[in-house]
Length: 184
Image (cartoon, rainbow, N blue to C red; front, side):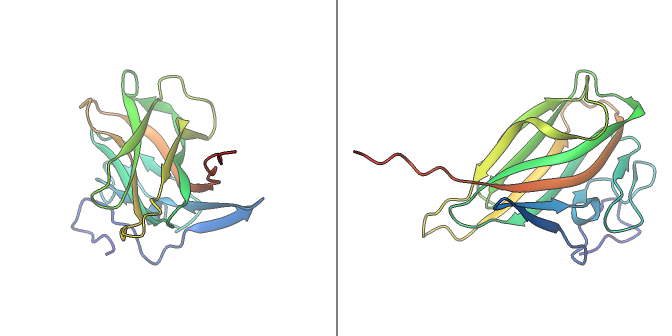
């Protein structure tokens, strides 16, 4: 459902397409900001969303509750790396002492896996968080029917106001699954 003007949260636009590319057999899918759910994203006091569907970042003006989420239809037996391409503006504030968590789970009842990143000393330009790889595997169990991957970026625990974060894409990259060693 698209966001309405009287609702403060931005809901992913189903008409916005993710960009999927295959390079050297590795499939990478990029979700632009308008394909993500952004808490307070439909309120211009807190976020500046791009006018176009693809290409421009969403810019955080100020929030104390950072929550940006999405879903991806996973494939049984496949493993995925989850991340967000971001940057900080020169006047970014509120990130000292805060940890940003990137979390993912398979299925509504799945257990979250997570990695945390600090934005206190970020790289210049665009960079990906989490800084360490967050991989999640879709169970290849025949009884498993919910293969949807729920993922997000969060900083909801510090209560600090923060701003100056630009979000370019959520990135879901297929990772080759290493088969278990065979007994000799």
